[in-house]
Structures are given as C-alpha cells and as structure tokens.
Amino acid sequence: MPEKKNLVPFPRSAKKRKQVLRQAESLKLRRLTRLRSLVGWLLLISIVLFSAVNFTLFAPSSLRQTFQIIANALGPNAERDGVIDYPTQSATVVRPAGSSLAVVDDEALHILQLGDVSQQKTALSYASPVIDTNNNYVLVYDRGAYDFSFCSTLTQLFSLKLTSPIRTASIGSGDNFVVVTDETGYKSAVTVYSASSREEDHHIWRWRTPDYYVQDAALSPSGTHLCALVFQQNGAQLESSLQFFDMDAGEVRASVNLGAVVGYTVQWLDDSNVVAISDKAAFTAHRRGEQTSHTTYTASDLLGFAFDTDSYILAQRSWSGDARATITRYDKSGEAKASLDLPSAPESLSYAGGQLGVLTTSGLYVYNNSLRPDWKCTSAGAAQRVMLTEDGGAWLFYSKYAQRVTKSSALSEDFTDDSTLV
Image 1 (cartoon, rainbow, N blue to C red):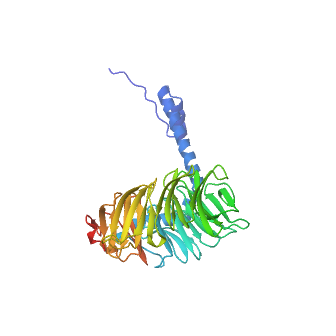
Image 2 (image 1 turned 180 degrees about the vertical axis):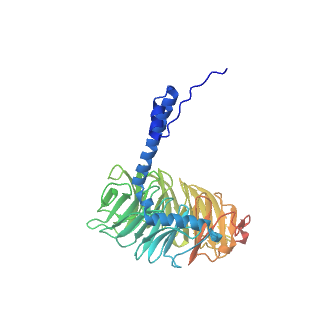
Image 3 (image 1 turned 60 degrees about the vertical axis):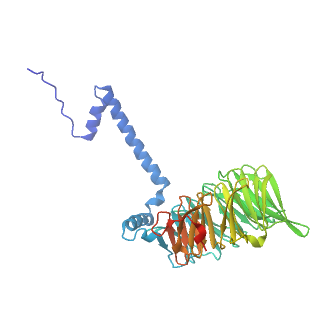
C-alpha cells in the first residue's frame, strides 16, 4: 500500500497563512516569503514617493487633460493631415518643443499635439513675446519688458517679473536658461536660471558688467560654460568681442576680439566651439580664447543663417550665372564643407538633424548634409516659415495653423533635381 501522506489544512485567514509560511520547515520557502513581503513594502513606498513628488499629475485638471489626450488620440480626427489649428485662429510666435508645438497668441501659451490635443494652456499677456525651446522645456519672455515664464511641455514651472528690461534670452539643453537684461547701475547683466535651483528667484549664476553691452548669450550643451557676445564704444566705433565663462566662476575666463562689427547672435557647436554671426562676418572661436575662422560678406548680401548641433549654414546673395543665392555649410572650425546655388532667394531657412530646409514660393525643398536634394513638398508654397526637427520632419507655419510633413508624408515626393526650384 502506498504510504499515507500527512495533509495540513491551509488557513483561510491571510494573517495565519503568512505565519505558517514564515514558520515553514523549508528554508527556501521562508526566504521566499520574506522576499515577497519586502518587495511589497518597497512597491508601496515607491508609489507613495512618486505620488508625493508628482502630486500635480493627480489634480482634477491633469486627470481631465489625460483623458482628453487619450480620447482625442483615438478619435476620428487624430493626426488629421498633420495639421494643428491655432486655438484662436492666430499666433504671435510658434516653435516646436520636442514632439509638441508651442504657440503663443494674445491670450496664452498653448502646448499642442497632433490630433487636437492640448497639453497645456498658460495665461500670458506679453506685448512682444519670444519663444525658445528644447525637447522638454519652453521659455517665453517679453522682449523689452520684465516678465518671463518657464514651462515643461505639461505645466508651468515658474514665472518671474524682473526689475530690469529683458534684452534677449535663450534656453540650454536641459532646464537651465540664460537671460540678458539692461541692468540699472550697469550696462548689462547676464543671469542663468534653473528650474532645479533652490534660490527664491531660481537663479544659479550672474554676471554684471559696467563695461560692455551684452548683445546675446548662450549656454554650452553641457550647461557648464557660457559665451556672451558683447560690444563697447571704442572712439567713434563699436567694438564687439566674445566673453567666455565657466559656471563655477564669475569672472571672464577668455576673450576673443571680433573688431568693428555689429553682432547678431552666438551659438555653441559643441562644448568647446562657438559661432558668432555679425553684420559683416561670421566667426568661429574656441572657449580657450582662440579665433579659428573669419568669413566675411557685406551686410546687404547676408540672406540668412541657421545652426545645427555641430555646423552652421550661411545664405548669401549671388550673381553667378543663374544663381541668385548661395548657401554654404561650415563645420565647427569654420571650414566650408558644401555649397548650394539657388535660382531665387529663400523665403525661410531651417537646419536640423543634418538636413537643410529651404522654403520658397514654389514649396519646401529639403537637402541632406552634403546639400544634395532629398525630398520636397511643393504644396507648401503659401507657408510663411519652416522649421526642421531632429527626427527628419518639418513644421510649416501658416497664418492660422501649422502642418507637420515628413519625407514619407502623402504631400511629399522625392527630390533629385533642384532645377525646378524657382
């Protein structure tokens, strides 16, 4: 006869079951019970900490927004021809922010997604609003006035009213940004703010100068360096220069003299090299204080410029043969790498993700990093402006709406011959 097994009834009470498991003869079973209990407590603590840090996600407005996003994304009008209508049928400034679109009108800042999805609406009343963005954050400031607002793509993080008027501002690669003001008692001030700063006004670095007027300033990709494009009166002439700083110090670490030019903007091409555009020349420089190139032109011949992560392009007027404009791509040392002749001046230029977008009255034409034809969208001739994104797509901006197009869009086609560009 088979040996009779001892059957132990398992308690119905959860408390008693846990007690039996903890006192089991098997060491493996006792360890597994303790591990399961530990994992459960860790999960509970994680949920509590997440809820405490992100409590705004569970506010009624955030929950309604989440349900709206899901409903609109699954609705029949989702991603309708890649079009986003401006909420008030007009926009003062528009700029991509990651996969979203930041739109400022007379009433508010709107963060919009394809499919009629509104991620955020923040009330603003700026007379001269300007937007700068990166993939995750949006900076809006009132040029010549005192206010700015810093937002993620989901909510406003903070806003400030300064005591000095804002000349310009630009966002870094993370949650840091720099604001240039006309400071009382000084000629200019440059302040770096951060959403993570514990200061009451969120500033993390400041430089005030009684000697220079600051035309523009930019943070390096790592956020550890800053370059300011400045000018001062030298007799009857204005003399411009680049001033380099490290974020762990308040004094100038290096300087590059640019001569008697009027600076427009400065941009980092990597964590060590910058390009400065002026009315008469484009300069590249290293943050050690070395000028690495100098490309001259006349002010009336400069048609436009644009920057990518490690290179930049200049568009100039041309009268060579049938060309009426020439676009040249330069690397971070200022060396010309490719050029493109156009039979007409471009209406708008954009350079991102190794692609150049040229908007003309006959449509959008996109070129690769060697400035060779890639794809085009001839229905875009009525667009006012184009902005390419790092993923290879483009936003076309019209008076009442914006449209997203890519190489694979139904409106796009292969582009192998630029002789059709007029």
